[in-house]
Image (cartoon, rainbow, N blue to C red; front, side, top):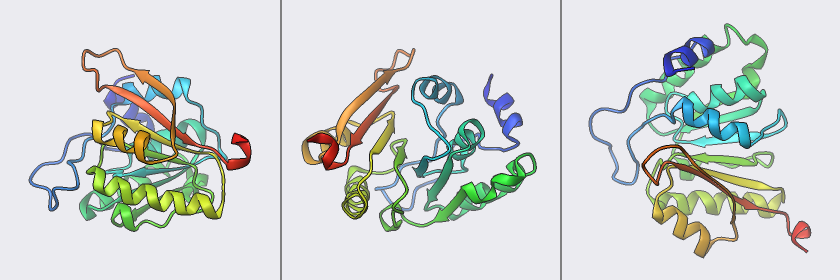
Length: 204
């Protein structure tokens, strides 16, 4: 199923890339994860309706609608760009015309990633290289604080990960690489990595 076909199934419009200049060098340009990559990854990496996924730099909400459609998963999109945030809300209204009973399972917030307050039930966090590693450091610190208050298995899902992200997570955090998927592209960066933090009692 190609991009436009999937958009029609979900009744949304998330295509296109960001134009113009970013207001901060620490935040990267918007580009949605290709549906073809999502299909390959989520055939191997399973979610359930009990999972709570946060997409940092969600843009127009593609990942959120895709996951809710396929897994009825609770999804949150965090987006600093007000224009994209408004488009995500418009997409939500369109999506809910076909999935009326799922409104409470899809939410968007227009806030800086490092200022988003992690909920105790959120356990999956998605990053398509949305910002510089300095921002990632603060986001992961917030996740760690939430973990200390309410220990649960937490996964960080990285698509097209930068070397800075990998170095930080592997050298400076307790997260451990548990899964890697290389996509059938010539670009070695075209891959998914999953880093996991488990409750302390499970490690003993």
